[in-house]
Image (cartoon, rainbow, N blue to C red; front, top):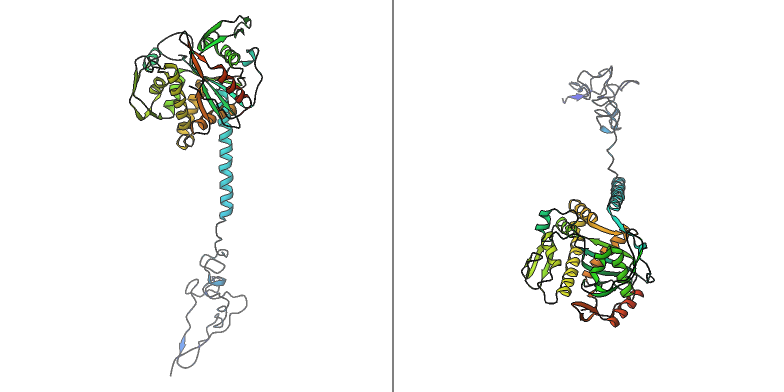
Length: 411
């Protein structure tokens, strides 16, 4: 005869199910139901404390917690029941990550603004300029490169081939017009023949008599930025809104901070006075080489005009280099470059960082072909000084005042 398994009695009320630790737990250990006994043909053995064969099985309470788990009541740990682990809330995580990044960006931007604003040297008071022409449309910046040796040691002067001449003179002067019909960059040759009119002394505050015909850079040498602005406004009729000046050493520091500037030189040239020694072709100039490039004039037949063209070309390349993602997005390059620039610039008292940024982006735009760069129109020379073409200058100024596209061409 086949052996038959006898089914035990149902679990009495209050007694734990199979596998549930408790006072009446089977001796075989928690979570392991006692095996039924076998008899020869007599059916299931009647073991006390054992439930019906189906008791608890259909509800999933075999070997522990409801649902077959082992961590709920009656599980091997005897702890609270655990449901399935919930999926991570990615939408919430992304939201908080974006909020954190936005906060960091805002705080960094505000801190950078106040840091940069505190470094601007607002030293030029344009309110001292007398008899000014009316403002036109757009904004006119006077950008000056001076031969200031401020902060330079004798070793620096020798390295940069600047010499040790006292005082300051203008090595380059440009008017940048920023408007809605294209930006225009106009170089003013320093040997331009102009009238230096009556002016208010920047230190004394007294009205000084006119000096008559002279070179344009003499105005700066006589009484600094305010007389230079007064002279340009008097000879052009164009209102100058902002003034920006940089010296020799500051210029070289900016170039070095940005890691050098890539430029293509059309023709090889040398100049023992500036230290220039360049081959034709594309190359990267460091601060010392860049200063030599923009200062050289003895190597060219049309010395002053060719130098202004080189200055425009290099400044455009510098603006482009500074604005590249490798500089703007790299804090180890961006902050040293900005620091070098702000430490070196002298601006008017009304110049804001936004004005400075507008000037910079306009220069970059001109270099990218979105504007026009030119020399002041020249009709001839007298006593070694360049004479402006009065008819063309009048047309040019009228177009700039009315913020029209410039049709006049320069030399």
